[in-house]
Image 1 (cartoon, rainbow, N blue to C red):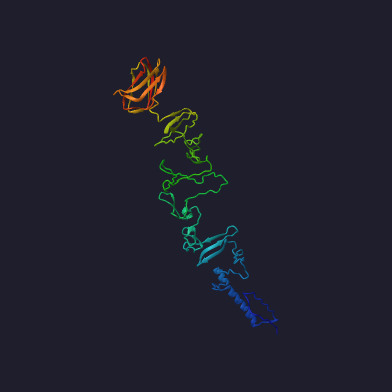
Image 2 (cartoon, one colour):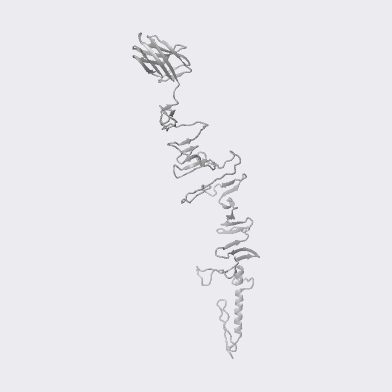
Length: 457
């Protein structure tokens, strides 16, 4: 009788069974031996599982349904829950894993090398939006677009190909459309999103000077001169509180606006940051604030604020206003800080030349002057008169139509020789008409002389 082997039964899959080998003519084979081997085979079959196994612990279930237990025996927080290594399985194909359902491939993970890994998804346009606090990525095969749903929101395109529209790239409260005229129309909804601003372009590359414009508007669709507007800003806020266009630069000599012909190197107009403006040129001289090269036309009033006499360069005249005894008058200064002339506020004048003499005290009419209307003679009205041998010579105005003397219209000079005298106070010419000029002396032997009369009114 041989050696009898005793088996305690199969412990697989908890542990691996230690099954001894049977030696002919040495061991007696018993039912325990056969039953233990049978138990081990049954445990292996159970672990592997039948086709379409419903046992979540079976290998068939895990491989076909993709389920695995994340808590591995003996694992810890740093352990990898599941490793799917296809190194020896894909045999050169770039498909590492394919996910299928009902015979349709839903997704696949591919890549034959370290730098060509990709994820490919099937049609997902019918997928529900994500749950709150979650995100969902789909491929919309109908639109040929990648789309995302965030926090329960609707799907938005995330594609970046060349056919992407502005509206697909921007989903934050603004409506971007192509209107009936073919223009791109950006409309920002009231209060959506909250806050100020509409379109902001920021260049953070401050280390390198830019050689191209940050914003370039290139209009090449002009078909008729004068019929298109390339750039327009319309601000419809409260009147008196808005700024339609604001341009800021770093220095006072920097240019905030300039213009010129297309393709031309010459700048025809420029506005500097300090407020200087040039039209028809591109450089300022001295204290100039506005330079216009060429003829100008003003349809309306030109307003001049009072100032002091300006300096003028060679071949340059200045037209300006300044105060004159409380009145604002217009002046002109000649070139090279030349003489100053008052152009307004000067009354019309009448200048008469005489070479008359009258002896005695009887007034003699030596001439007449005509006034077209009632005026007031100013104290700048002069008479050049005198005497030949002493005494006082007098000159006065008398209205021809009624013989009435004009009050205050009197001049006098005492002593030998000629001198200039002015009227002591303003004299009113009462009405239009002729007025006689009378010359006489204060005593019988006086010989009165008259050379000229300047009337200012």
